[in-house]
Every structure is written in structure tokens, then in C-alpha cells.
Image: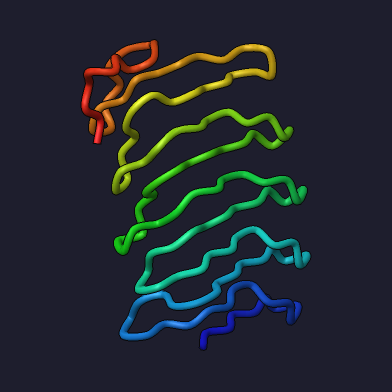
Length: 129
């Protein structure tokens, strides 16, 4: 089990490694004690959540065994507005993503293997993963 602390004695990071890989619950905290990260891992892979110092969520997704985003991905701005929503495949955006640059505007963006294909939903005939 790993436990890192700030100079003020508060916990910075906690978790354990088995054979060099993250296992079980991992958490990170800001110096004031605010939780900024949580992950539940099996051999480095698993669901992760990040929070802003305000306590509002920042990112909800999962990591693959190489600690790249994989699966459903959602991201929020510090004001609480969800800005990105889509799927990741081993660190690359795939398929149709929803992007909201503001609370009143939303765009569909099509990604193939991490590259932007077009500013619209992906055609249904397009294989994206």
C-alpha cells in the first residue's frame, strides 16, 4: 500500500500496486483535503473520476491497462457544464462525440481512430471502433 502525504500531514495519494500495476481503490487529494481523483483498478484498468478543487466533477471515464482512456468518456467545465461526451478506444476518440462549448450550444463531431472526420454525427455505415 502506498500513502503519500503533504508537508501539512494531509493525504495526497493512496493506493496499492501489485506487480507494478495499480490494484483496488486509488485516491488523490488536494492539499486542503478535497478529493481530486478516484479510481478502482484491476491490473491498471478500471473506472476513474476526476474532480475540480471546487468539488465539481471534471472527468468520468475508464482506463485501459496502459492507463489510457477507454470506454465512455464525459468531461465537465469548472462551472459544471458538461463539455464533452463520447467514447474512447485505447486513448483515441471514436464515433460521434457531443461537444458543448457553452450551456446553450452543442455540436456533433465525428472521430475515426482519434482523428476528426467531420463536424456532424458519424454516418451509420461508418465503423468507428
